[in-house]
Length: 299
Image (cartoon, rainbow, N blue to C red):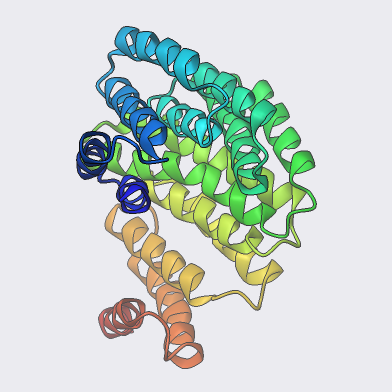
């Protein structure tokens, strides 16, 4: 039952997990998992308070959690889970403190790695919240130095930026252009750092393309095309249908907005879309469809 409850908690079903932990407490009072069940229920309730923004109650319960369960098996894991919840609510200092506490007592290599990674991410995010580009730059440098021996490091850094790109897209669809541009700025800031510092890494071309797509989303078509061309020139083995289509979309929008003439746009759109059709016939079906449609419209 305890194993099943743990699995439910890990899959984002805390209420069902709590129900199972309660069954252990009520029906198996002599079970060896009794203390763990009580500890997990308290941890889940703390997380609920954090997500509800009730930080005062969360802190009260956290003090109880530490007093009653310090030294217990899974205590460090509980601290890390609580820390992650604080991070999701942008309470980065609190998250860092709890991850640090977990590191002091944990003997799990997996948990220690996760805690160190989450601390590094939180240090970047808290400086972004402070709108301090110099400090963000320093935090990214430390991130790169700390994980330089990890073959997945460029992947990790790439995904540090993703929440800001996703937030920018959401804000843009809601018509909050200024806030969207700010969020986009930070996504681009991180990806540019990746491209500059790790040009030979697996995620450098993806980051460069993402920069272009981000500029395209805020109608800075010149920058979007610039970064897409950089992908094409610097990483010829990348899935070039992506920048080809992005360039075509940018020229289509520029023609509609009167920033280039239709003949100028047509020349570039047809050129890049024909490359998609001829060089990447098995690429994303949507991209091939868009390419063929553009050629029909502009040729």
